[in-house]
Length: 270
Image (cartoon, rainbow, N blue to C red; front, side, top):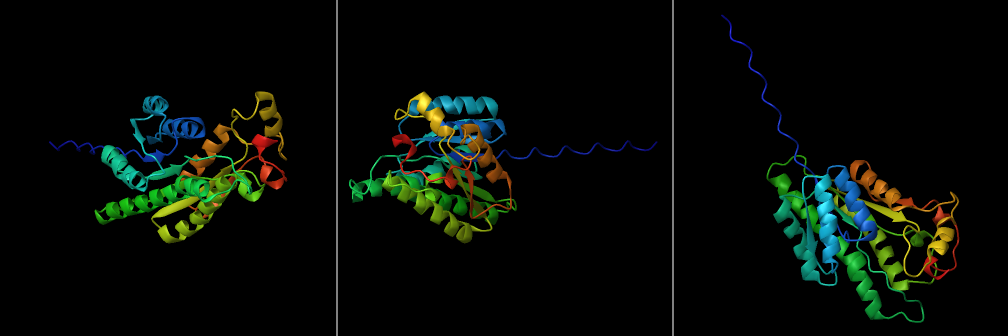
């Protein structure tokens, strides 16, 4: 009597991917975090001071994916930035991507410009993202040395259509985003092939205390397509950047074409 063929052993489940989304407690970062969790990403929710909102975002992400957790770090503090990825990796076991959404956005112009404002914006909006990319590359290198042949990662930097449509408002903010855009090109070269680096540049996406709902709707419609970006549009572009293995060293402008128009002032001051 011949033996029955043995059933093939089940293949191990693929390890879930983990992404750190900075500034994910509120607004656009929160939308991106939830969109990625809905796609199965484990989300590390970074925040600076909005602990309650961050914990809420992490809870909602965990309900969509396997797990989530919130991590505080002040991006003005280099030591705190350098400690962030080891904390995330210690919690999740590994990290596969970073989405740099956290951003300082304080008004200044040519008259009020000073060293202090520029330094604050550069620390938060450019230096911290570069350090996080550096740390992700190191982590992936350690994984590769340990035999992980699939150790590849992605950094997505949130930029701004203002870089392609400049006006004199928010000078330090704009300079810091210009530095981040240039860093994206350099990092894409320096960290390849282990890490891809992609920029996503929204247009006017969310309202603020500086704009009434009616005025926001009017400005949002000022584009060749008759609409600028929504949070869902931006989150979809981030997902695309994370998944498309041919993208690096480039920026996706997600703004309804607002960068093709000339605006003399920032939207918040129009």
